[in-house]
Length: 386
Image (cartoon, rainbow, N blue to C red):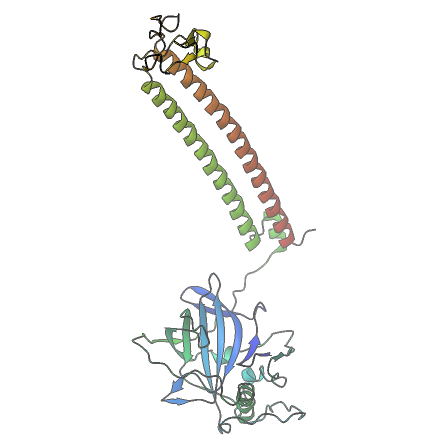
């Protein structure tokens, strides 16, 4: 039980105390919060207190809150009368009129002071039974928000349409504790307009846990324990294989694009341009032959494409300053140079792709092996093996 200065709250999260099956989804019971006065009105009037059973959807942050109003024969004095300092706490008597065992779960000990918490011992056999607050009761459902900041509209409300009776002492203890911790203001939110929301009637039905016969011999023979851990580990392994497959597909696509680029480069260079002497395809990428570097008019070496003495660009095979053709060899067709270039680009691409493929395959295998190893360990832990 906690008192945060705004509300009393029983923390039941991760205790396995059940929940609600609503709209084909499971909502786990997390907290029971106490509000005074009630946050919902009945025929325009507030009840002395209201319990909020806060449930969280199993796969998201969506909340389902069951509001249970508390009524008694003699409502507490307005503003509350806190328990005197040092006074001994006397638990409500089970013989009091309208004594409610479900409400008593919140009053086994004195409510904690402001900004304090206490641990309340439970029943080791059955745990707290609050089904009486819901079983067979009519409820009104609507889509709304939390009643404390930030008032997020992620809540489905189920409001019990008939208040639950409790003894005067039970209701007064809860009422007084809330008013004492909030400076006499209470912690209820004023009623809000419906704003066109649909109100849907429901009725709570108790669902018992299914009884599934267990045969240890059959479990050992099957060799398979279908647990959540096993399902998660198998999903991780499948995700690792999917990522590895996608990586290999990307490399193959890169290979195809590089081949296409090499072919396009070859086609672009195929017209009958003359590049200059090239005794062999390998020489196309070697250092320039001396014939491609001849002196110009001023004794300065002239590179293919540089300007001659008259300012005109000199090309291989074109006359130099002295009228001598540049280059002594016969012109070579561009398709030979393009073919050599394409071959070298393709070979370099194949080498890069081969290396990348080997690296990705190794990493994928290592990842898959590690995931399978972790999955096996998780399954063994779930089965109690060492």
